[in-house]
Length: 255
Image 1 (tube, rainbow, N blue to C red):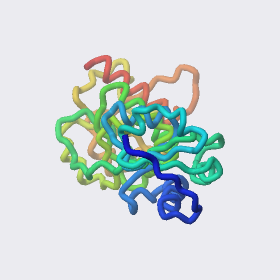
Image 2: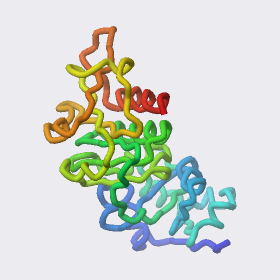
Image 3: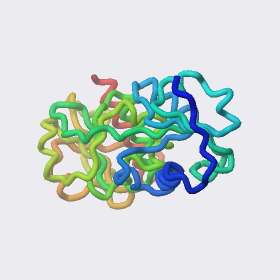
């Protein structure tokens, strides 16, 4: 086990990086690392085989921290509870966090069950869709330009560890989606076969669109199937994360 380093200066370079990663949505792109906070996310990362470059503990938590955290980390750092509150993105700081290297940039994997995110902008929706993707066997998520930053603090928290079991590719344009080599299924509240009557292709790529505008015209043109979720209660539309959960579950049942 690597013995901890105790940091006592607020101006320490590591703490400056952690403050940026904890508060800025796209800081991870510059730093090449992301920050996860709290025992749930830290444990989820270890379970998926991710090893932290740095594990950071509050002084109060260090004596009771799970020993596997310290053993897994390349470096262990202990800071005051005040400093931990300053880098935390939570109302109630988690007292432990991991600084983890971003996965190497991946290329689109052809022939794989995929979720396409088309300008889905709410971090909570994106994180929820990632959770559904992982739960229902969709191991690849590709995000078009305009989608919320996939490794941002809010998306990581909403994803609840789903990130660590997925291949995530972001910043794409619609024209590159031909590389998926699977049928594209688009949801629409105005056209297409009712989901329960549609023979879904397996594997396929489900396209989930912007919260207000839906799927863009370029992606609609690539669609092989249109699916409609029946809403007998009469609501105008479903939240995109709720729609994604329904659609991805329908595909997993038929797998």
